Amino acid sequence: MTVTATSVGESDQFEPRNAPGARTWARRLVPAAAAVLSGLLLYVSFPPRTLWWLALPAFAVFGWVLRGRSWKAGLGLGYLFGLGFLLPLLVWTGVEVGPGPWLALVVIEAIFVALVGAGVAAVSKLPGWPVWAAAVWIAGEAARARVPFDGFPWGKIAFGQADGAFLPLAAVGGTPVLGFAVVLCGFGLYEVVRLAVQARRTGTVRRAAAAVGLLCVAVPVVGAVAARPLVSDKAEDGSVTVAAIQGNVPRAGLDFNSQRRAVLDYHARETERLAAEVKAGKVARPDFVLWPENSSDIDPFANPDARAVIDKAAKAIGVPISVGGVVERDGKLYNEQILWDPAKGPIDTYDKRQIQPFGEYLPLRSFIGAINKNWTAMVRQDFSRGTEPGVFTMDGAKVGLVTCYEAAFDWTVRSEVTDGAQMISVPSNNATFDRSEMTYQQLAMSRVRAVEHSRTVTVPVTSGVSAMIMPDGKITQKTGMFVADSLVQKVPLRSSQTPATRLGVLPEIALVLVAAGGLGWAVGTGLRGRRAGDV
Image (cartoon, rainbow, N blue to C red):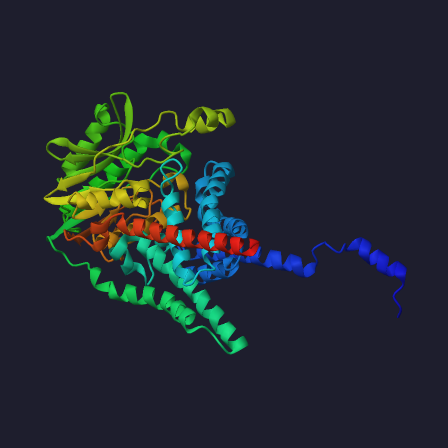
């Protein structure tokens, strides 16, 4: 066969010399696809699945995708990783309001992951890069937990580790240290594999690099084992018998609030049913009762009828009740927990401090109203923030209140423990999210908080899943979803503080400084390299 001049010319027309060929496109598409798939793998490691260990190969692949690339490539690949992770993780945010808010949230939150990708790519050329890279990830989580609109920490790596071997590290330095250990181990895993392949190809490998890679895998594992003595479910200040009430709702969805009288009646009825079982000797008498968030969206201070319903339930059970109410005071609306004594009525309150943007208040109200007036109608009046920690004294026990969304934030939970809480209650309302994964993701947060501060955590929820969580993070009882039920259990009270409680934000600050140091080193090295090239 001969090749004519015409055939060559035609070939040149269809594939110009400067056009990327199939191999070039493959080099571009394979990392992009790997970034998305590794993000999906990270999502699969989160509850309700118990595949926590998948976070390690997810970050190993992410490390392979980013190592040695430019920061610009890291930015794009990081964004794809963020989309692969956050799109399925946060799909519950659009259950009742449609895909618009869900997609907008993911698009914004993935920007933080993109910036992390750029940072990881920059430090990936440094010696011991997995350490710097893991610190950069935690710095990204720290930023995402604070901005915009006071942050959105959902999807912290620590919250996917409630069933994992690394969980004891939460007691050492909270969610930042737990997350750092997981990410470091994942990046270290890739480095070990990379060096092993390199050694097989060339027959040589730098011992220092190999040692660092192995340490990045081994140190988090050894650290988690060493931290196990910090995890205990033994009582230090005696025990109390707690009842968590799940009254259920007539139906799920955004019209939950229109059913508020029915919801109050349901919780009162379940409490009275429990009181009858106690009287019959079928169930142990609780020392106090915990109702969920929004269990009385009718203000009992302004509505005598609602007050009478709660009073009747409290007198029937004969012990204090923490009631989740919506209260208007001085023209301001509060998401409030009310301590209700069976003899004295309301005697103490806690106002939710970390309120949810676009759920309990509407940022940029005029701008959003111009886009969609239905969204502003759903949040007609903004809730106001509380200013003080909430620790109720209930039958002698100090119970710290962390209302629903607050459980995602490190500072809100810690403040209750440092204010004297011997156990924690996380009253929640997930009725607006139907049967989505949201309730399981939030339950995992409470399990991590139990270990982080070594406290029993109760989770009373309007429609499920309500649960009793021991200080070691284990769930001992839980309800189904959209059923009326109650949980009664004797639980330990504890007053000692874990290193994580004592250190507070310091471990996170330290890791952010490590990330800044690594990025500074990488930028400095790059600048020196360019100057040397110019010379």
